[in-house]
Amino acid sequence: MTTTVLLIVIAAAVIIVGAGIGLVMSRGRAELPPPADLQEITDEVIHHPERPEPHLEDEDLPPPSTAVDTLERPETPQGRLVRLRARLAKSQGSLGRGLLSVLGRARLDDAAWEEIEDTLLAADVGVTATDELVQNLRTKLRVEGITDPELAKAALREELVRLVDPTLDRTLRSTGTDGKPGVVLVVGVNGTGKTTTVGRLARVLVAEEQTVVLGAADTFRAAAADQLQTWGERVGVPTVRGPEGGDPASVGFEAVQRGIADETDVVLVDTAGRLHTKSGLMDELGKVKRVIEKQAPVTEVLLVIDATTGQNGLTQARVFGEVVDVSGIVLTKLDGTAKGGIVIAVQRELGVPVKFVGLGEGEDDLAPFDAEEFVDALLA
Ligand SMILES: Nc1nc2c(ncn2[C@@H]2O[C@H](COP(=O)(O)OP(=O)(O)OP(=O)(O)O)[C@@H](O)[C@H]2O)c(=O)[nH]1
Image (tube, rainbow, N blue to C red; front, side, top):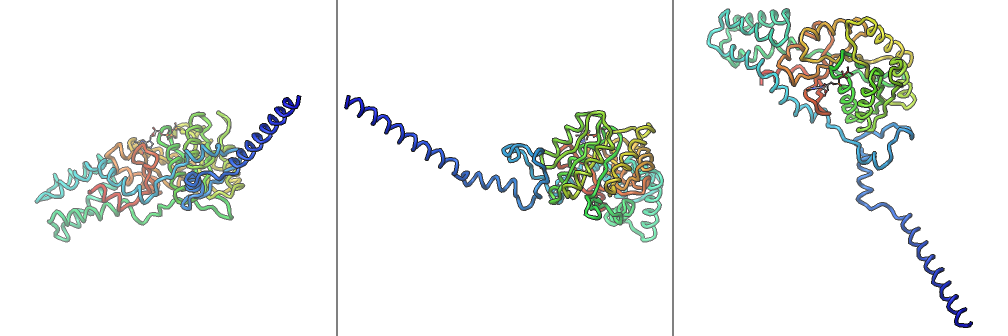
């Protein structure tokens, strides 16, 4: 009996001591800070000093581990310019080479000037601009008695830069007034690269430490909104979207409303691709802009044109310009064509500057356009 009682007391003591140790250990674990290196990685990604804190509401935040794993740091505009300049030179090489090989000849007769004219026309520079360039260059070489190919090349460069016009203001108008966000509306025909451009612009702005909201006013295809949302998630930017087939104007309105509520710097609104020949769709685009402007002025309307479409791009520019007051052009797919002269033609057609060029399929393959850089790349 005494032995049985003794055994019970010992067993009870073992259980109580064991439970106590377990409790202390589990508390200790709960209170342990994360390992130093994990803490550093988390701080680096979420609170990196060069990156704005994303303005996200709780329900939009992905689980913490996903945010840490997926947030990317986009390439800075300066970094990408150096990389993309070489690509531009490669795609436009035939235009530059064509012009320089003729100018390098000992004698420039009428046939040589015709060749120069043909090369410019083939690169989509347009008839008026080509005539102007050839006349000015001919006069300059004659009046100044230039025969040295290097001096002729310098004169050509000067004329090309003048045509591309370095005096145009090519900054993205993304600053709002009265404490409201800047609103950038992105428009164009199907497949020109609108969604890609909106995603890339979000990356440019995030790299410049601005806060961004995306509006998926392309309610035509659910996949387009998904695509946009993915671009946003990768850099911690929220996307406002509506039901498939819903009213694009109301998505634009809500995106800007969200931008105002979150005190976001810029709202980028993607729209559905629409044929400029369909008046109903063009009217809808006018409505999207008007409805957005009940919230805040649209500070920039970017028309996205596929550089490979040639003259058709010019017609698009004219019709879109009539409906929504286009204020800047994004020329995509310049990597896939040697017809860089479209830059000159489209600026003349619309009277607004090319502000960005797309030079590949990568996420950071969008470069701010610069007249002198562009001409130097042509003549490299
Ligand atoms: N090579 C190249 N491809 C590009 C460039 N910009 C966009 N693209 C490609 O063009 C295709 C169409 O791009 P999207 O952004 O979906 O075009 P979208 O205008 O939004 O299309 P819709 O919504 O159908 O009107 C995609 O495969 C892009 O990767 C560029 O600068 N160079």
